[in-house]
Length: 104
Image (spheres, rainbow, N blue to C red):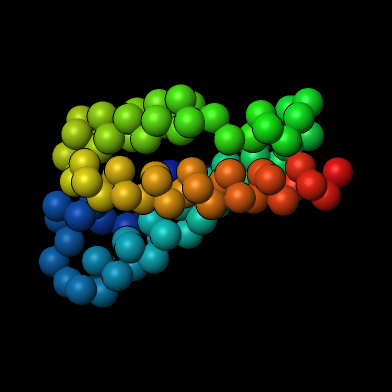
């Protein structure tokens, strides 16, 4: 699980590009760690689901994207970015889960 980054100033107090870049790099590493966890759940889903046809769930996909759009709105980051990122992430997750299911 990713840890909270405490060795870098918050974006609001950065005064140099070195600080900004260090914060971005640390954030990217934390996102990468969280994505590894998320894909672990995709492996679990592939193991648990009884049929390949259960992998794609459009209602769940829409729910996940809507949740992240709402989180973006509440977190003051662009909703359209959240929608586009999670569209790509969910589709990549589905493809990965299908491959894992097929490998069983």
